[in-house]
Length: 176
Image (cartoon, rainbow, N blue to C red; front, side):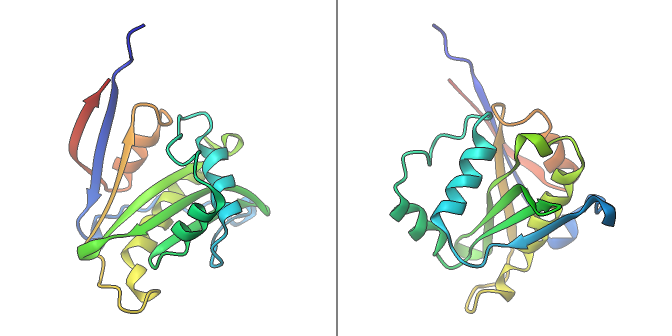
């Protein structure tokens, strides 16, 4: 059996003005985005496994609860959850790194919420929170770069959504 090649795109924004926000859903759509301020291993695992189940997210599946908890308690690690009428619809996880970089480590929607205009809004909101992350974490340097990677195993609209939000491809790799 031959392995299918996987293409990975690395994208970034180099300044807050690079962000091109998506339209905010209408008020009657009931969409709101809230930071999960209390680090919760169970919430992090739920979002990761539910959003990533059909797009091959597997790297964190073996993590025990203690690793989830310590990961989410790190300064500059944030989970922002999108809700539609009180139901979790998706999330974005930010990961502060050295020299003012912030990675959008994970981003996605639960399957029932895809294709409804929530993803662009959630990505816009998450990128904006990456740019202002230093205001929520004492001692954190200002953000100089926001980056993300996506691959050909992710949803079919992922790469286009990142590009529409102002992310530029900086590198592409192909692996077996």
